[in-house]
Amino acid sequence: MAKEYLTREERARNLLANPHTHILRINDHHYQMKSLATNRIYDIHSTETGWICNCPDSKFRKVICKHAHAISISIKLRQEARERNRVVIEEVSCNKCPRCQSSKIVKHGIRHNKNYDLQRFSCKDCKNRFSFNLGFEKMSVNPKIITSAMQLYFTGESLRNVQKFIKLQGVNVAHSTVYKWIKKYTELMKTHLDSIVPQVGDTWRADEVYVKVKGDKKYLFALMDDETRFWIAQEVADSKFKHDARNLLRMAKESMQTKPKVFVTDGLQAYRDAFKKEYGGVKKGSPIHIRHISLEGDKNNNKMERLNGEFRDREKVMRGVKKKDSVIFDGSQIYHNYVRPHMGLDGKTPAEKCGIEIKGKDKWITLIQNARKK
Image (cartoon, rainbow, N blue to C red; front, side):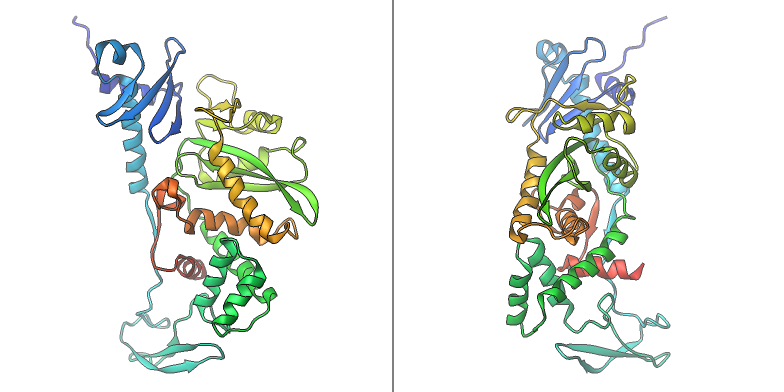
């Protein structure tokens, strides 16, 4: 009986289906894969003509090997999965009556509030008179003022500087009122966004950054997806070396409904212990933990350091965080993931790279109103 030979592409698919296969994403153009036969590590690079590998098959036969095919196929499969599970957060429609859902509505004068005017409508079917102000009911200021305050605050301005900006718009409120707005809507958005599962990659990174809370030394432990830079989870700890990071890894696994194939950290013992307990680092084929981090070269943690720097810059303006459950932690995570475009992602947000699209010119309003609908 003649022996059946598989094409390299078929071998690549078998390689991806093998639970013992681990692919380490260094960056968009560089991946590493461990040979199952020899335990050698092969480097696969992106070129103008496609993916090339330094394995003997590619090096001496000058062909596209199964490792290069595997990288190409895995990228395509991830893109297809994100399109299949794509989440679009639409702007809230203002063209139906909230009582009877009729589209036969007409403008019916202006409601004059203290600081802004609001268009009123009436329904021809049920005679209901109403105005569209979802998420901002009973607020004394224009929604644009509130979202502008949030944008300024999370981009680095102090509460008093935000207050001064709002005063130039003709709205005079205390800086404590600005903080109440930010706290209220951050909590509202977090509850809604926690129900959405982003399509993250299979390489995650973790690191910690020093932060002052009421003058005391604390540490912010954060976990981020390598491919999309999505800030997955975070928690504040009293100690760096004695902290149990298991809760952080558990939160990440539950919110993403998956666990990584590769976990990259520094040499902190807390990550090693938590990784073994939560992600299982004993059996062959289990996720691998990379702990050897250098400042330069392939095995660096620069993306996490950038996230730490982003938060540190914000914390310096505040001259320290006032309390452990401050809105700055959850708010910064929402801003980083859903609002702030990243140069490293070609001007997209991490959420967009994960298959979550937010419609509308003002993403804050879209998020708030969708959260309020739930």
